[in-house]
Length: 265
Image 1 (tube, rainbow, N blue to C red):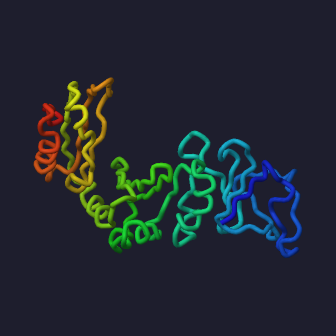
Image 2: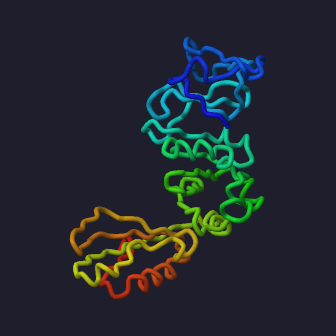
Image 3: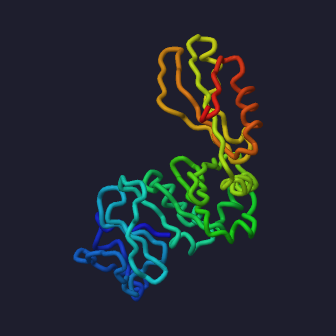
């Protein structure tokens, strides 16, 4: 994978294949646009990144499989790079292919869209997704390099986060299999004001401790100060395992005087 910055070096960044890489092409007057063809003599490959902008990833394009320019579709809305599925599916492992970019420009890439056969599942989670999951067309996978997190979206459900640290493919499969089931939710309200309790306060309940498909997220506003914190967590997941999730939360926050309320009560 190559990254060409034509905003800085429009005359020498890209070489001519016909010269064996010795001569460059002057692209000072080249005006990029989405779908514009890249000349066959440009020494570039599908998946390469070419930028004409001097701010983050504005005016940045990918070379697609047909040697056309594909404009960056910034899903962050803040000028960062989104590597789309149409590009990452060309490679067996998107993270390996773009490793040099992620290393040298760690904050440039906002999201990497991945296919179900991408190498991330074997490399980071231990095994490939089962064929039945790979063949589904209602699931999307997105990797956030800054958070080192894989987000899995099933149908119209909110994206579910999986940390690369400690997650196994089975955890992802378990979530996918229950993602469309009827949901239940409860709120854990807390008001920690004593120094000793504040020091022991465990914070958010990790989804790895909850039944498959359950998550714990901040609910409403959070306030705090010196040895003081007040707020609420919302726990949500499949209704069939709600009692198990409730008991886990009750035990996790035991001794902190929290108030647990089923949503809708």
